Image 1 (cartoon, rainbow, N blue to C red):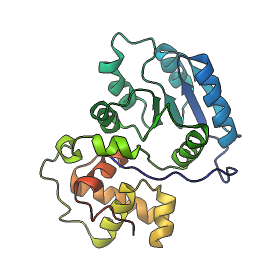
Image 2: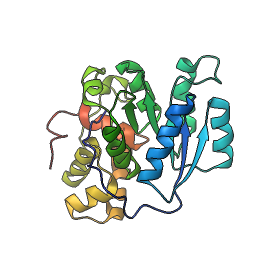
Image 3: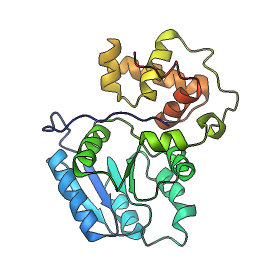
Image 4: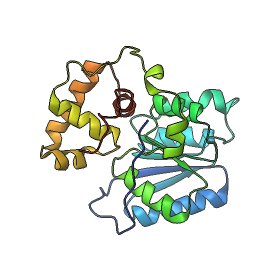
Length: 233
């Protein structure tokens, strides 16, 4: 699980006009606040709301969302704790960002393995929420350091218990290290003086070599392969 430092506040630049974002929270005041924040970060995005899991399903069926801001404890599921990871997995390829007061490391790691790209505690201050969401909307991954440190060892939850970095090239290890730091492809390309297309080629090779299926698992793998791999390049 990766923990990355979001950027500072500032005007959004270069964000695609076609972004579609779903804000799903059953508390109208929280939902309205999140909609306002999203509008500030991504003023050209189309934002739709959902007050429960049924409305979320209906919105997903009609709106191909790029990002889904999801509160876990909403009405609409018989057992949200058991079913939420399946919901998260089913929202792909949309990027799921959990915004919740639930801060159980073991459970959050289940959501990460299901495909969530970020977790923002509801205790965060307004400026923290803005900077973290901006970082996530730009393609990064983010999980709070205190939750990361309390989570079980990622390797124990990944499919390959004997996961090793053997077979990866030095450049692929560099890419994996930066994935572990939560950087999006654009920033990885800039840091390593590569094209974004080349970064994608390396990332696909990493998935194949390590038996991974998505970027979040790659971030977990980077941390499980040893502290040296995730050191800043």
